[in-house]
Picture 1: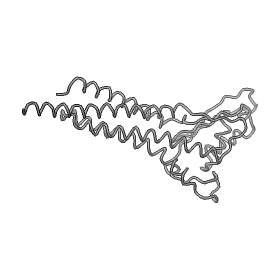
Picture 2: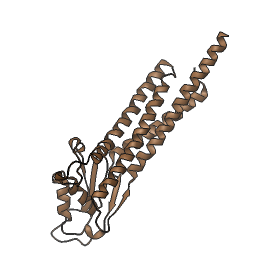
Picture 3: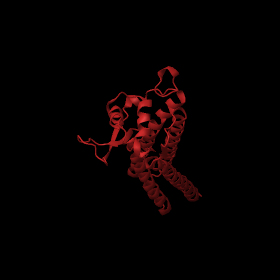
Amino acid sequence: MVDNRYATALVIGSVLSLLATVYLSVAVGTQHWYQYRSPPGNHEASNASELREDFINGEFDEKAYSDTLFRLNGTLGLWWRCVQAPGQSHWFKEPDPKMVTQCVSFTLPQQFLPKYKEPGNHNTGEDLLRTYLWRCQFLLPLVSLAFVILSGLIGVCACLCRSITPTLGVGVLHLLAGLCSLGTVCCFLAGMDLLHRVSVLPDGVDGSLGWSLYLALISSPLEMMAAALFLWAARSHRQNYTRMTAYRVA
């Protein structure tokens, strides 16, 4: 039988774990990790439509899509890159064209492509730091979600067995998941900082962090708080059980 204090800790920990999983899943599936704000005139430029077409249908090239993100209010995520450009216009030029968001996903092979010291220039050699930061930023959240799913299966088995002992493993897995979520944010921020060092932003273009990144950042302490509750419940219950056993033997 589980004490009410431990049961309450397990319930709160489960709720925190569920919230963290939802936040991280939404963050991984959206493109608002980093966003650029370009001057309004960029959208009205004659080559805006050409940039959009190359962005959607052109060959994958880091410099090409980065320059388009800079000029067309781009947003970047772990699996998506998006731009805003005027929609399909009629034969006449509209004074206030409607802006349309176009998104392209990173394919799995593209996620493993090397990054170069000068984006787009294969002759400058591979930038190992940027390459592995990019790979870690999309692998770590998947590992984090896998840890949470595995801990959930262990928790279900613990409930079926009516034992609180496996909660210790659940807590450790949540702690690892929280570290992976935090590592995802750190890798992304470090990668963007290195990208901006080798790719100068055009005049008037500003970059800022998006809400998707903040969701991932929030999920990390939620997972760690859940881990603390699970570990406390498992450890305290074990100590209490040991004392009760020693008392009965005495």
